[in-house]
Image 1 (cartoon, rainbow, N blue to C red):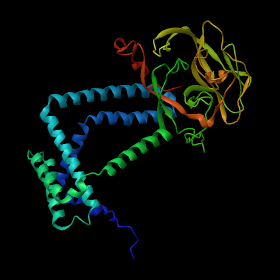
Image 2 (cartoon, helix red, strand yellow; image 1 turned 180 degrees about the horizontal axis):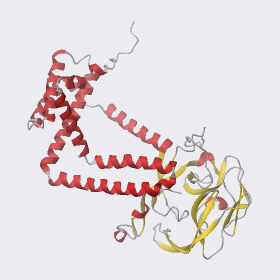
Image 3 (cartoon, rainbow, N blue to C red; image 1 turned 90 degrees about the horizontal axis):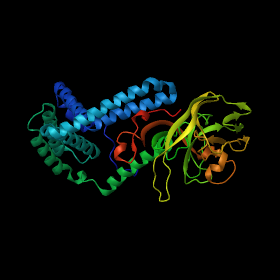
Image 4 (cartoon, rainbow, N blue to C red; image 1 turned 30 degrees about the vertical axis):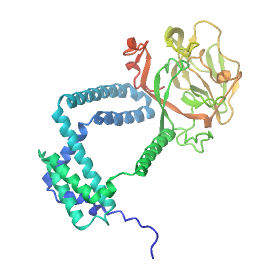
Amino acid sequence: MADGNSSAPKPKKKDRFDDAIAARLSPELRAKLRRVHWENRLTSLWAPVTLFGGVFVLYLFIVELHTPSAAWARPALKGFGLLMLIAFVALAVARTAMRPFARLRKLRHQTFEFLGEISDLVDKHRDKVTGRPNDDLLEHAVTLAGALATRDARLEEELKAAEAAADKHLAAWRKQSIFDFGMGFVKAFAIAMVIRTIFIEPFRIPSGSMIPTLQIGDQIFVNKFIYGVRIPFINEVPFVIVRRPERGDVIVFNNPLDESRDFIKRVIGVPGDTVELRDGVVYINGVAQPRELVQADYVYWDAPEDMRGNTHWISNEIALYRENLDGHVHLAGEALSGPRRDGAGPFKVPEGHVFVMGDNRDNSADSRFGFGVRPGVAFVPYGNIKGKAMVIWLALGHDGLGSGLTGGTGLRTDRLFLPVR
């Protein structure tokens, strides 16, 4: 009795069409075909981009697991990135200047794509592609693979002949339907959303509240995995994966008093802590956190908006301190003049929340000041935390590379790949 499933069973590996092609080629031809395949991959403009992306992911793991490793890993990554940039430019120039090379590479790419396409189609519709059609397609595929492996000048001619055979025997399935295209887009979008929701998300620093740790224009990656999978819209974290937020972590979160906005601040107090700020010194549970003056006149650049919503760069000065927050050493700034913004206090951090402050202590709308929404203290619930800041992957700030052409904003190569401490 039929079970209602009319789809053909997936062919076993030994029955697959590409294995049948390989079986008709000599070991020497198969080795040559693999070399041509890798030559084509490594001369793609995507090759240096993909290689750098893989090394960068490895770098993220290294500095997240052991931040001091950035002392050697960051220069190595910058050197490798420069090498990949040179490779990308060289490939682009070669493909523009050497037309025969570019044309041959494109032809090889089309051939590999075609062989993969007909192999998939024959395997998918094996019950319908049998006998002479299968033999005809296989004969053309073997001839085409041989021409590709031996760099035969007749490759283009053989490809046209093989495509004609495919149009004859596989025409009904070669035309991709709108549904197939739509499903491909949906799958790609779903994968991107899963990565963004669970693993990693980019975030741009819009203000100077975290100076000097993070500056305006820094683009960072946020670790969405470390604190647990957060369910969007309802702001719940059903379970912890690695650990809860700790003092010293730099976190991105939805402003609990205005969830249309994302903020980035440093965790100062965790559940049960009593936090107080006196004359710029942080006290946790009555214990002063050590700090030392690093620079009395540190200059930084801010980019406030004017009445029309336009931004412009202005310089400010702060006193820069090195603060040791429960073993987490980082830099924090204090205004040289004007009213102190220590806030009231002490603040008792409730269960399931954290107390946060910006590193630019006198220019930050944080827990002390209701995140700029209302007067009084405000804490960040665990469910509002999107993740932990990891590393600066791009920095478009004041006086960077090319800033003379863009109103003072340019690429800050000195900040590339800095881990967020």
